[in-house]
Length: 343
Image 1 (cartoon, helix red, strand yellow):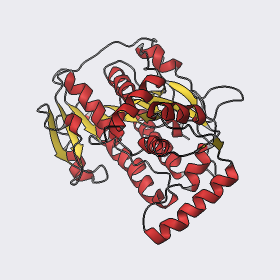
Image 2: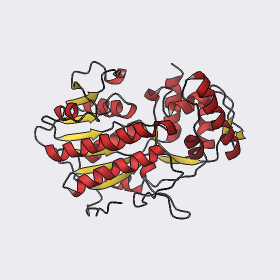
Image 3: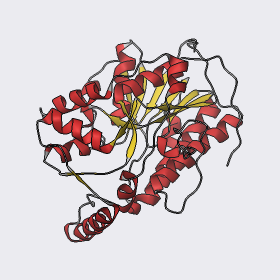
């Protein structure tokens, strides 16, 4: 593990905009990246956005004259370096999210090697970096306490590949910080928002809308995508450096989460708890089914284990440094359900 000393900074941030600042956003067509860009351009900021050759630009940022689009891959150092010309600040949102064990190689390539490329170029071009990590890269809480930024991740043979990739990717940023990089890291919880559609966190809403009758006993932090983007912008435009921040609005048990979703959709709430042994049968059946259908398994072993794990997160630090007031989750859930009924 890298040992990095945090800088002692006052608890409230001050803006320090750079002259002739040029912003670069990786993962620009993703759920979080597109929301971030929408907020930045609403503030009148011009920026350069990266997309892969076949990526589709989301409607919320489509045909925006303040966006300069550039095709690049974070794992293609040459095309990525071309995108850094004149850049003074970088929001690194590009990442692969998967709980499927078969995606391990790709997860490590994108989330570790890709992040290393971005961090190295930020050092070379003297650009400030805001890196999007994940709560998956945080450690375990001490007994009867919430997980904070000071809880460090320890390797576990049972941990899923996504967690490994995000932790090791974050370590690449800390390595660059030790080399002089001006950077800040955010660790968002489960991000929800209507523009996710039925992908990612939206898959949970789809299941409940279609009448899924089970819930799991786990718990996690959840946050609205708008609040994640707001927090990122506030931190980027601050004097904070060499710090990490958990971004989570509230801790929800999955039973409460799916019950509120069901209420908003006007369907029956899940009433049966999915026990670990039941999930074990389910993910094995899903894997068998995927062999015959050729489609990705609807449930994986990693996802099943995560769904029964209770992880509660402390958000005091981000609130103290930015003064953000998080949108209540019941409001976010209502907005997501309202948006999805139109699909």
